[in-house]
Length: 447
Ligand code: MV4
Image (tube, rainbow, N blue to C red; front, side, top):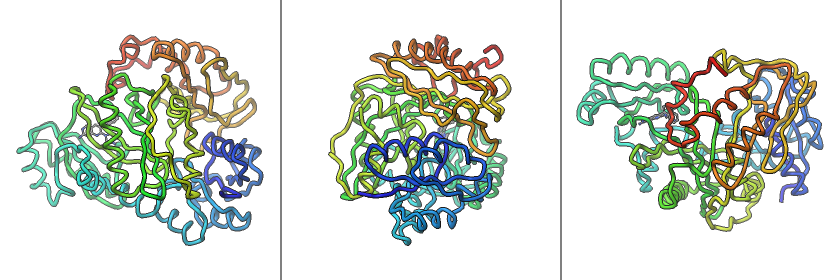
């Protein structure tokens, strides 16, 4: 087992990783930018190394600085958390070169899933259901138009280097093809330095359902059921839950088996997530694979009683997985508490937290790095807490979530708490019958 792990991240996920390391008897090294000197991850780690100024590029994305910190502290592994360097193939490769174990996917696996058109072809070959569309990249706008006519509109063009909704355009009629093609090409070229596009039939009003998987170094992959992430605004998830109100036991078995087949095909190591769209008829299609631990992993931990960070560390150390799949025994939901003003287009609201009261009681988990007197820096993601609520049924979860949100107050900055409170009273949300377009028509004015 590793003796010392360096955590190449900040905020709640850095704390989350430190907590599991402590329980496993592993020493921890925090790295921090000058903006995070007073952060809890710095205080709770056994050692801490300053890696640069506030800007992410010069600190949490600064590979030479982080590798140096690992070298001088003698860390034998690096956990990248989510975001930052977690899906950076070059960083994974450099760690390998320096004989520091990267607790995440190999450079090859990251590359294989990072190019979305290639990832889709790989999954299709492995027998995973995929959305009908182009075979790999489109060679020309003419090829795109021809295929769209043959398949029927609406279609969607997606940037192969994109993901998470960046560089894609929905096209509803042939007259609009050229303009959307040009826009998507321009946007992806500028954003990713890669303007490759592929095409798919557009699935109307789908649900976003993802399967958590874990693979070991011996080619074995298991799944831990699904998370429903359909409550999103502009591709930012706000609420996640498990089990999904639309996933039957039969569908869970099928999607779990598909996710395992896809991950096994690339000999996937570590924790990963296979994202699917589920259409109105309950048919599911591969969308993307994330080669990292995700923000919303705790709801899976709550319903399966499985520490995903501990499992990541164990498989990285060469310990084989049990090989059995895990099914939900409870219901769990996460509300992301961001320092943002939900009445003002979710505009970031950094600044000093003057007072805070965290909710508690049965079935409540709060993963957060903030405290009274803490100043939220403007340089990073605005998520300041994850409120995770678990109970025996979806109805009980919603009642308990509302109670917890009422106890949760933060003075000094605007937060998304008022939005979540309103959502827990929304009849459509409570019915469980909604899709990824739900928040497009939500009234954010009267919270
Ligand atoms: C789609 C789609 C409908 N049809 N692809 C958005 C993020 C990126 N991963 C892919 N996305 C979508 N791809 C086809 N063929 C609809 C979306 C989509 C979406 C997906 C999941 C959650 C929220 C979404 C919001 C808008 C569009």
